[in-house]
Length: 219
Image (tube, rainbow, N blue to C red):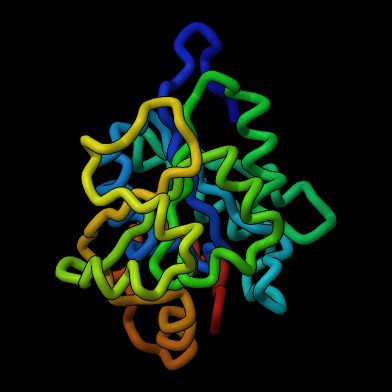
């Protein structure tokens, strides 16, 4: 993975996950979010040893290959495999520190869902994460902003931004709320459908679907 030094991106979006497999529930909201915040690149980062999961079904190489296939179909997507090269749990703070060191003049936006925001204060070194990036939280259209504010700790509530016009450039620690169109599917459901012999091609980019079929994953 490399980016031309002469034209460093002003904004990089970051999306991590097990991607077991990567599916349209990951990529369609990500495309929408990248366009919305004006990011030049989206780094897709498969986790090697996810801190909150017991393990994966496809191995690291297979998950990376599926992400790479998605990146081939999306010009501004890039596979970032740094976490797969670690032999320790994949902590977001370590990854963001490395990306920031590589791109010191770039603003980082870490994409997450509502569930992740609600548990964010349990993440490893979560305060440090907020010094390295902004969070972009995808919520369902129509979700009550007041309900969200009532649920969060005061430390996070004070950082909420609901309009892009309120964003302060080059500042970190802002939590930007984005109403994105959800795709109601999960990797768990896709694996279950494949194991049951049900079609799931509508939830996967074709190269990923073909890869899963070719390698008989999740059967």
